[in-house]
Length: 366
Ligand SMILES: *Cc1c(COP(=O)(O)O)cnc(C)c1O
Image (cartoon, rainbow, N blue to C red; front, side, top):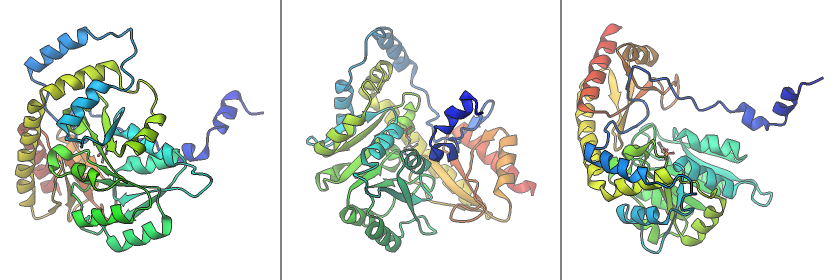
């Protein structure tokens, strides 16, 4: 006889049981340079305004279900073309999930979600839990798009949706413009440009929404300094956005997030300044790291840097850096494009100095 617990678990789809839960490392007591967070807090002045604003929030009422005020501010700050529509998500992760749900099980046809590997892990995870095939086209060794494989994969698999992270995570580069244009024109369905790192790349497909009806641009406030809010936006043709909006759960953007984001967007110069500092610090780190002969440092247009450790084990270097009090990300690859690679988020000048000295110590150890 099976217990009620065993019977309950048996009802859960096997694709779910096979998924490895997304692992978040314990960062207590460590300098946290593992998750592409902005290291800077809001100014005291803005914090005081925020406190006043939030104390007036009507927590007993449901929030504005469509967050109309916030959407208008986002449209202005992020230069979303006037005739394009916007839908908001509880983080861009939720938008990826809504998009996947929108294309899943399409009239019994085989459905697949295409992206590029190594890439953002949530595309594959969400494809798995919505029951869609994931097709990951391998990038070239320098993390550029392999257009021959891409053309072939599009022709063979006819993906319902293609995700392109721009810049890509974990490689930190922006793919070639013409390659992306070609993908948009070859795609038999939607193409989503995931511009999570836009504040650090200063390159965007947002103004090209007017040229391609199957293009969608996704942004988030997470990497620009508001990761705790959980707010992402998807911009594109109103007819597509209207369909995606049907899947959105009502009130998915809570009142505290709406009020906070509105206030910060009214003072956007403050976080623009932070992004500028991070871009400057990225160049400093890139330069310092590049001087070490046993590090292969990849170019970055994001707020993090991917690097390969040569002549040593990346695991040992990662652990040694952690022993020195700095948490970065171990890409955990023995083979393939990410073999022996680690990823570090750009922090404050002090944090970066701590990282550099931990890294130099780790490289000497062996
Ligand atoms: C971090 C990241 C996101 C996640 O954004 P949230 O808005 O925090 O859910 C989306 N896409 C890429 C490529 C990322 O690296």
